[in-house]
Amino acid sequence: MNTKTVPKIIPVKQPKINVITLGCSKNIYDSEVLMGQLRGNNLNVVHEANEINKDDIIVINTCGFIDNAKQESIDTILQYSQLKDEGKISKVIVTGCLSERYKPELESEITSVDAFFGTNDLQNILHSLGANYRHELIGERLLTTPSHFAYFKIAEGCNRPCSFCAIPLMRGKHVSTEMDALVREAQILAANGTKELILIAQDLTYYGLDIYGKRNLDELLRRLSDVNGIEWIRLQYAYPSGFPMEILDAMNERDNICKYLDMPLQHITDNMLKSMRRGITKQKTIDIVNQIRDKVPGIAMRTTLICGYPGETERDFEEMLRWVEDTKFDRLGCFTYSHEEKTHAHQLVDDVPEEVKQARVDAIMEVQQGISFDINQEKVGQTYKVLVDRKEGDFFIGRTEFDSPEVDNEVLIDASTGYAANGSFVNVTIDRAEDFDLYGQIVK
Image 1: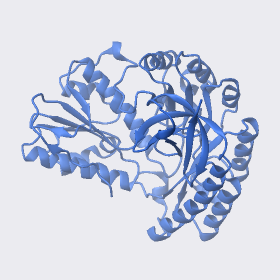
Image 2 (image 1 turned 90 degrees about the vertical axis):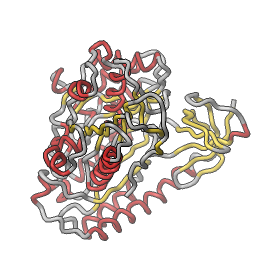
Image 3 (image 1 turned 120 degrees about the vertical axis):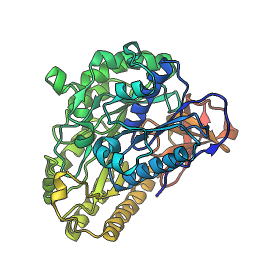
Image 4 (image 1 turned 60 degrees about the vertical axis):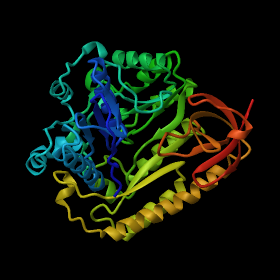
């Protein structure tokens, strides 16, 4: 289990609030909003600093999604609690999903923590740190990503009834952010150099139903597309059941809406989908994937799958494996099932052994590795617009419109053939491809 490395203790003069972020991109967004408010209160705030001193306050934004993430969060809390007990930092404050879900248990077990807060306790966290919530800072945040891209949360919570998922327990029901506020936030980001918005929510496709009475993601996309300076808009976490096809019209109309869609499908057999309470069948799943590909030729589709859900038989798994082979997703992630308390699936028997779960994940990913290799080989000789994220060694590292940061392919550009500034767009001709990486040279 990887946990956050505890920083070296190096004396520094000014105490600071050091925010540690664990978990998903939605947690990253929340940390950035918190830090923006703290900075707006003229407090010294940093993100995962490598230096600490005895006056520092540590704020840990936790994840409580699955077992591994929960354990990482607990380990991190314990590490910093020990530093506090040793007098090497002054306070430890815990927030986020784990704290929302298990606050009473955490308070009784880890007494060195000064305060536990949930996922919607921003104002209370600020008050505990001697800061006030500043309404004029709505839409402003302190980015932890490179400034040229930003995660862009358009809604909180989820109304879906998926049996395996604890997100509604931790984040509540779906609440869309008003469109005008999102456009203002995009304008602020663009004015500060952000070129790519990565739209995130637990379910993007539900956007607008609660406040506008209809699915309104297509209108939001068009309005964000009009923001001067935004060159890429990327969609993550689209739910398949009730998918609003009109967002694909916006994708076809606007050059700055990436032909990319992250749609977690979780499984394919009818009995698994029914037990998972996904509201969709195998045939409808196949149909929606085909319709999306027909409507947006060349779109890159990413999905995630779960192996070892209660009752998953070898036949269920083999059917999913064959479907992955046939469908040839551009990007795919696969995870072992985690038996989460208070979810609907927790009533079922977690009857697939852990080693079987992992073996099934490995088999799926081996198939996907071959699919990715074949897809990448077809890109050799082609030229793509690439957004440069960073430089490592002899390469500039970037992404095409078909790749999201952290989880998808990267383009490694030979730095000896030309210069590319971080955050710049360059045209790159691909001259070599591996399973999950492309290699190329800048062309004028």
